Amino acid sequence: MCGIVGYIGTRDCVELLLSGLESLEYRGYDSAGIAVLDDNGISIRKEKGRLSGLREILESRPLHGNIGIGHTRWATHGVPSAKNSHPHTNQDGTIAVVHNGIIENHEALKKFLIEKGYNFVSETDTEVIPNLIDYYYEGDLLTAVRKAAKKLDGSYAIGVIAAAEPDRIIAVRKDSPLIVGLTDDGNFIASDIPAILSETRDVYLLNDGEFVTLKKDSVAICDIDENPISKEIYRVQFSAQASQKEGYDHFMLKEIHEQPQAIRNTLRGRIDKDLNIVLDNIEFSDDIKKIFIVACGTAYHAGLVGKKAIETLAKIPCEVCLASEFRYGEPLINKDTAVLVVSQSGETADTLAVLRMAKKLGNKVYAITNVVGSSVAREADYVFYTYAGPEIAVASTKAYTTQLVAFYLFAIYFAEKRKTVPNHVLSDLKNQLLKMDEVAEKILEKAPEIREIAKSLADEHDIYFLGRGLDYIVAMEASLKLKEISYIHSDAYASGELKHGPIALIDDGTVVISICTNPDISNKLSSNVKEVLARGAKTIGFTSCMSDTAAYGDIVELPQIDPLLAPLPAIIPLQMLAYYVCTEKGFDVDKPRNLAKSVTVE
Ligand code: M6R
Image 1 (cartoon, rainbow, N blue to C red):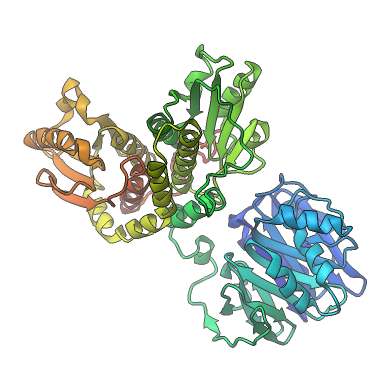
Image 2: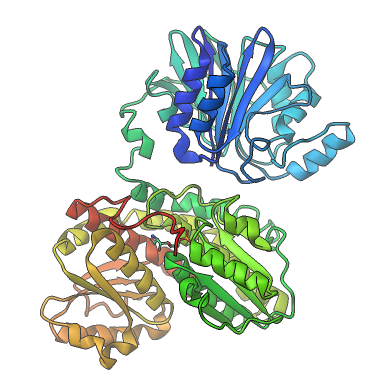
């Protein structure tokens, strides 16, 4: 996730680029930069950190010009640093590029270009693009960009300027968003509408494979063979402010809805066309006898699902620990154990402390994290990134589901290596995983029915969640989500434990929400639900086992998939339930009281 913007026209471009980037900061904010073209050629200012840092640099070293491109970065390849910031250029600085996306074949392209005598200065995948354009440049920028694009695998939205052609910006998109904004005194490209909304509401929405030649008084669009494409102008209906959340009322809702894409991004390149699992460059010793999975909060719940998946498929014993407990315990870490930390932010103090402690004790530390360049990412021996994109709402949603994707990939990978499960079983799981984005998309359609249920819960003081096996973990995560944003007291119980104490809490009208995704144990759960029903509970079921539904008042139907994978789609309607209860109560969804997105102190 990055944001790009470009302007060519009669006005000075610098402030236009900066204000465009400001609106795109939600897409990433670990570094920012602009390139401006004037009579002296291309000049670049870029800096690690927020846009404010770039503004300061521009105050001391100003730029002026009528054509420029800008970028705000959410690092994927290469740590956040001035060197890795965009724009990137060819070697002599005559072609500059901003890019959003991932060039999957950048290693091969880099090798090719190095053989042709090109040098590289950054660790990014992007830097191959200006050099490839340079390689193909023979006096026509559009032709060179088209030729370069033919060689690029992966996703990209690209803006290009060249000193030799100071009257144009060339842009193209594939699997990354890009729009064109039209004004009387110039034209824009941008990753998203917010970037240009203060200047115009008239836009072209570009499709994959469309190339744009942007001039100060014209916009031409063509396909990869330069066949012209004509387009209707789209008039934006919403305000600049609302669009910062891309039309969603809250970041949490937006992030819930981004889950299909986040799942796709996390799976991309991790299961190849022959169904082999590719775990980046992560190496696991065959001698690992036990894995300690350590995390906090929602990431801890992801770890609990991970344990079940790894133990079920790969038969490697796992212990899941809260980081805050683990660091003060006496964990039996030795040369046969591995420590796997899970952290969306990569900055959680307790998780980081465990990472350091395990390294000190000589263990290899593996990390699942969402933030490139975070402390966890930098200090772990091996890192698996969830490509969920920036998660802004305090309540974690898309980070969690992508952490589950990571664990499923690990579990299947280990099982394959250790030959603990027949291949056809693993292939089936992989195929189901590859379709998980569609399953998530479908379940999001349930929003209206969940909203109705949420309305009936807003005045409750206590809500209990029940489940067995993996469904108990879903119940725990659902309960955390509900309590952290709605401030309703909530607990989750393993349904078999009810009669050992918690059933004493059940009274007339007590709300009990049950999760059931495993047909093999559904009759056990329904017996427990009937027990609370008999004691006056108001029962709600989130279930894929529709054979025994008599015990539930309200029912939300869950998709029927392999029970091992079921926690992933099952949590999505429960995230929505928490969201709608919170909005019903009128609380601040994205910034709940007393909480922060990243817990960097003990
Ligand atoms: O950034 P991390 O994944 O390390 O954060 C861990 C927890 O602080 C986090 O999951 C927290 O529990 C969320 N607010 C839950 O929605």
